[in-house]
Image (cartoon, rainbow, N blue to C red):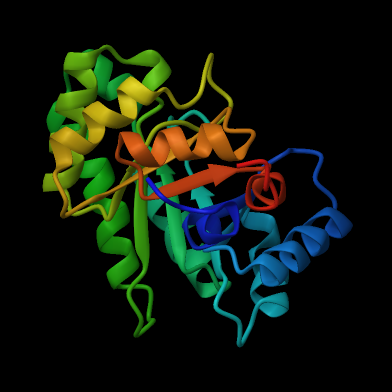
Amino acid sequence: MAIKPRDMAKMIDHTNLDPTATVDDIKKLCKEAKEHEFASVCINPIYVPLAAKLLEECSVKVCTVVGFPLGASTTEVKSYETRNAIKNGAQEIDMVMNIGAFKSGALEIFKSDIKAVVDATKTAGVTSDIIVKVILETCYLNEKEITKACEIAKDAGVDFVKTSTGFGSYGAKIEDVSLMRKTVGRDVGVKASGGIHNFEEALDMLDAGANRIGASSGVTIVTDEKD
């Protein structure tokens, strides 16, 4: 893929989900996102109002997480989190799937959990489309499970499937990204997230089929001119 580091910015969710992140950290994140024109900032829900204010009239979107990082919140809580985040200014929602339900074989519960978040974005009182990404946490899944989770998530109406929270045992792997892309086709996006530290690693993920990158090292990625 013939792409320069700086050209990757529009595909990066500039991320800070650290539980110790401060107001100053989020202000810095938003400043960097505006400077480099990243796709979004991905932050914890408490900072959505601040980021929305800092990024108003700017192309950078505000992305936040739901059911994070375990996916074990009830569906009702995830739905409320989604509506509340959108009310506060979020434009993209990265939800963690119900991993326990999926591993238990309760696939209808698994699907309805995802669909409830998708539906919540449509009843949140905003006119613009809200992007929904479902985090599969692929470190806990085998190939067959990744394929099945992607199929169900696509059927539930998500915009993206995403590899990882960054809090699991490992993050994005090339083979997982490739499998996810093969499964969802071209109608659904693939976000590679977790353990992507530099341009070469990000490029590998794009080559594997990702069209969005989640990283806390966004500035490093787009300023790496060694290529």
